[in-house]
Length: 238
Image 1: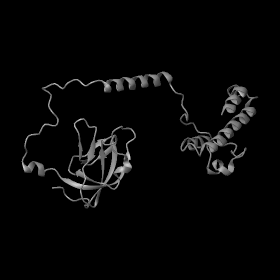
Image 2: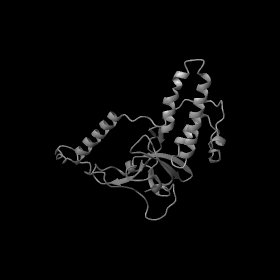
Image 3: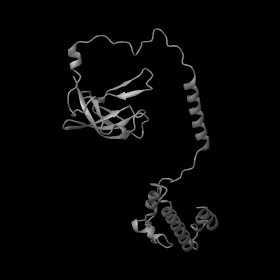
């Protein structure tokens, strides 16, 4: 890569592009650079999973030109169309990174500070709720559900997307348990689902229901509710 950077400085393709006389030389320079990048991309394939593929796509290369067997000079096809794409290794904005780290440090400092005593008039979240009639409870449809797939929602720090088997039905549920569970830990588990909760859309994913969990007052420990013995999905929780 250093040699390529120096080659660009020495050949100055931007200058060659300004004159008719420099056009043939410009073609050679651009081919040499594209060929160098092709070979660099092939060498990086064992270490980077996606970047080489993005590079090959921008260079207009197919499988034949990017296979290990093509690892020799001259493998690129002259005349291939180069596509404009995203910067593969964008420059780091040092000032923005420093500001980000400073903000994180302030948040950590605030989290470590002693908490102020709760005001007496504030409601206690753990206090018992008013009594309800059985008919009120009966309005909630609780079902056993089996987690058949789970994945992170990339644009959220809290949410997981769960695919649930509920009897003969398959449902998608979004749950804010990413802090406590890795997706693979949930697959195959039986959970308790509020099945008749009105659907909502979270981070672009429609959630049809809610799984029940228990947690302490500070939400430092959380556990999804499950059964003591194996039970079929879809069964009603009474």
